[in-house]
Image (cartoon, rainbow, N blue to C red; front, side, top):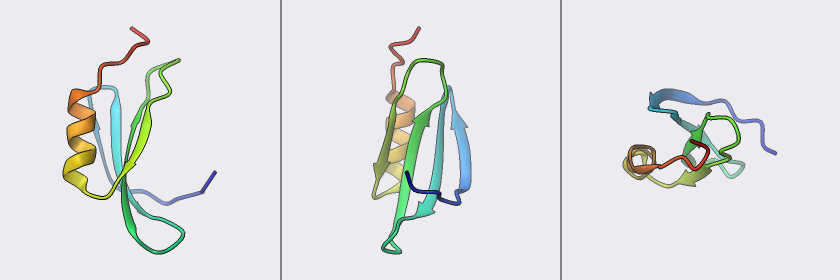
Length: 62
């Protein structure tokens, strides 16, 4: 697991969206659900895609 330093972290419902650089120096945007037993997280190339995923995420843990 990569230890990344996130910036511009925002919370959209139970999902947090943050921006970081990957091992190759490319900017990546991550959306991760913080609800217990959910496990959703994904990396995106654009901030808009990560925020869209956060807004449309339907947590199966509910």
